[in-house]
Image (cartoon, rainbow, N blue to C red; front, side, top):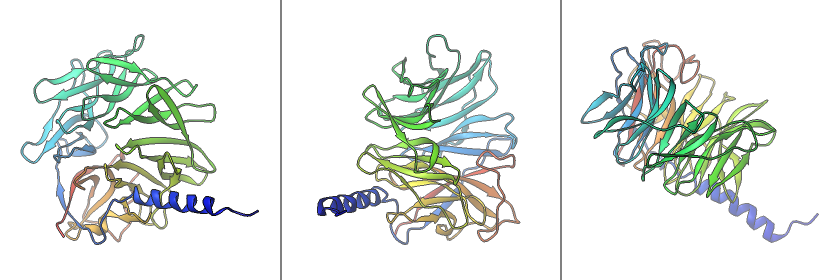
Amino acid sequence: MTISMKTILKTVFLRMAVGLLCVPWVAGQTYTLSNLGTLRPGSARIHDINSQGQVVGASGYPHGADTHGFFWSRTTGMRDLGFLPGGDYSVASGINDAGQVVGTSNTEAGMNAFLWSHQVGLASLPNLAGSNSGSAYAINRVGEIAGASGAHAVVWNKGTVKDLGTLNGSWSEAHAINDAGEVVGVADTQAGPHAFLWTDGVMQDLGVLPGDFSSRANRINDQKVVIGASEGRAGIRAFIWTGSAGMQALATLQGGNYSEAFGMNRSGAVVGISGSSLGTRAVIWTSSGAVTDLNELVPELPPGTILTGAFSINDGGQIVAFGAINPMLSIHRAANMDDHLHSGPTRVFLLTPKAK
């Protein structure tokens, strides 16, 4: 069969497009590391960072007890956000450039989504009719919030809640929203859970990587590029999706069979987690499609500190990551961590690009 020149050029263009959309890193870029601390019990996990370098996550005891959502900035340090009335647990999942924070807190009636601001504090978000539970995961610049209520993905906007529907399955969940109001997440299908993109009232199935049976989308930027993970018999693989090239696998560190992309900025910089022969590592994907261990890019990495995962990157290139501090650890020694919610104490860090 003869392949036309038009087809060849199209293939080359698509490959170049995927590469250009992953322009996360200038060759030789290194970072300084700041330990953000914890709330009193001494363990923390990280979820998001905005363009001002403000950070949100949760902190509590290593096994999850007494966990409270937090807001961190250089001027305030780590601030406890508390919880909704009747609750004793919260987690902060997303923050926008106005400093508005969204997350989830328990109450006497169950789990409920919240919006926090410096002016108002914690405020409960309404649930869909017939539901008494909700979770909020992301908020865009205009204050639209993505999450779930009951078994459906939803968007909250100015005090109202909108059902985004499903992919003809029983459930869905929204994980991220861009400034255009486009939403990504995961929804049940007849073939298993699939990543979705919701635009203008239509939920699009993004499919899976070849040979896989499930996928989930974790983030979308303003260029409508989507990242997440696809799972199959070969393991879990990070992906990047564009409307022109579809879903493409991202590389995994040598010796690993697990990777997941969690954070992306407007430039297409992608960060996440990759398994390796030394355990899980925080990573960044380069424009060539290669994956780089972030531990190797922090020249003054303190002894015993290992960055095991990265969750978010802002438009200035600052990255938030989690990891461990143990005198027995080093970047050349295996860190046998279960996952980003493992039962041992975790620490959270801010990586700031060094001026070149």
